[in-house]
Amino acid sequence: MTDPVGERSSSGFPTAQPMQALEKDHDFVKQLFERYLSTQDRLVKREAGPHILMLLEMHAAVEEATFYPAVQHVNTALVDECKEQHEEADQLIRQLKGMDPSDPQCDRLFRQLRDAVLHHIDVEEHQLFPAVRKANLDLETIGLQMQAYESSMVAAQAQASGRDAKTFNPDI
Image (cartoon, rainbow, N blue to C red):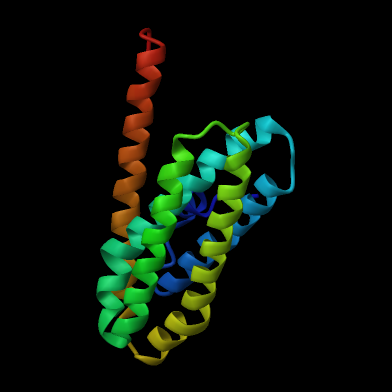
């Protein structure tokens, strides 16, 4: 299972087809949800759970900062619906961040999050993306904006991880 954000860092963001990058994210998070929800192994849940939450936050940030503003005029009501779905997911993510994976409520909330995310993916892939493709927008420009935003997030995350590592190991 390859992380699409990591893969894009090394192979390049598909700037001419930015929705393809979003669809890869969708596929990857579906796989992670399946991995998380199909096991009782607490170690797998401790690793996969935070990874799912981080990827969802990054994906939503890219969409909200770059993609949605660029396509808002194509279908304002649909973009607004997608933003509302992000807010619903954000509320669940905030709850899950503070929970221990051994808490029985954690699996229930992850299922609820998965269901909300799957509905959101369905709306984007079957309604919003086709409308955007028909609108003949400059997808290359949108893709470049998305690439730049994602790269800055990945760099900031790597920098923060380096600071965290130094906190734990002062010899670094």
